[in-house]
Image 1 (cartoon, helix red, strand yellow):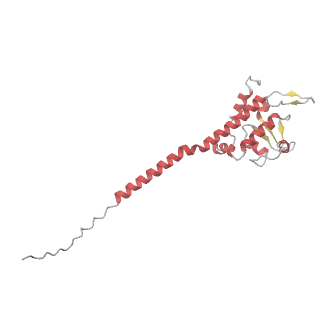
Image 2 (tube, one colour):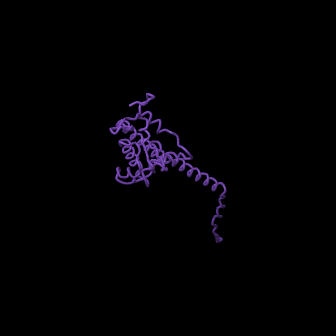
Image 3 (spheres, one colour):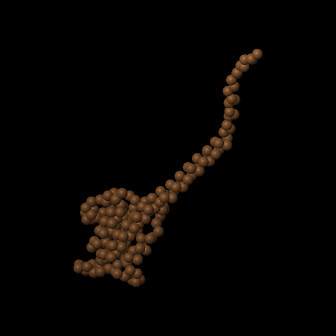
Length: 196
């Protein structure tokens, strides 16, 4: 499916997913989001629920009912959405509306008229959902790789530094330590009898 600019939805979704962090989030905090226990399954469930729902926006209560409970990696589905703004937008509660969450890629689609005459955003296509699920999995794999990178880079450097420090310490100790003179040989007093 193409949007008004002629860009296919998965490419457009990829551009949305690469949006730079907002605010003062550090790179480490952004990387660690997928490393929370059970985070990837929660993100995948949320993508599917929001992508296939007839309504593009969902409340916490509606998601908890549809997904049969709270997420395993966070206190709420809205919090999962806040932490994964590469896929989701969360509108906070206001005087006229309840807090709700939506899947960004749904908003690049043209509205369609529903049976009751209201304009609604269509559900995401199976191809788009497959792309988003694959993208989330790929991001998680990259974060895992980056989290374990220190083992292949820093560990050998650390071992080399310890070995170099030990060698230098041994050389310094060897240079400053003067060996004590050897003890004098053991002289035995030998008495010789004079033979006459």
